Image (cartoon, rainbow, N blue to C red; front, side, top):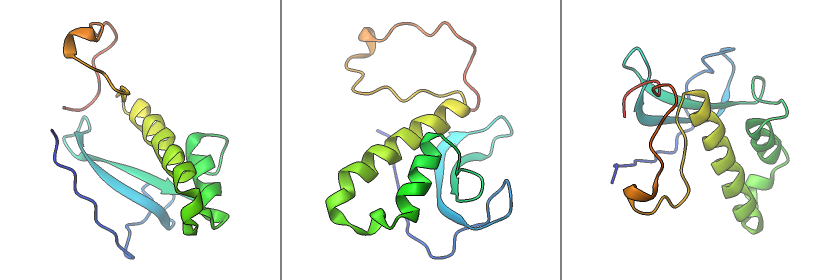
Length: 115
C-alpha cells in the first residue's frame, strides 16, 4: 500500500497556471514526464468552469465545507475532482478493483509519469 501523508497549511503555493491563490494543493506520489511529483491544484480562477473542479470550487465558495452535515457531498466532489485530474495526467482511479486478475489488460497508450 502506498504511503499517504496529509498536511494542512495556511501557506499554500501559488497556482501554477495563473499565479493566484489556491484553495487546495495535493502532491501525489506519481511523477510527471520530467520526473517531478504531480501536484493537484484547485484554483478559484482557473477551475470555475463546468467540471468536477468547478463543482468543488462552488462547494467551498458557498461555505459548504464548513458544515459537517455536508461532509459526504464534499467527499464525493473531492473524489470526482481527483478522478478528473488523474485522467488529465493519464491515470485512472479504479473503484474496488478486486484481484489483479479481474482487471482487463491495458491496451491504450502508456500512462504519463512513473508509477
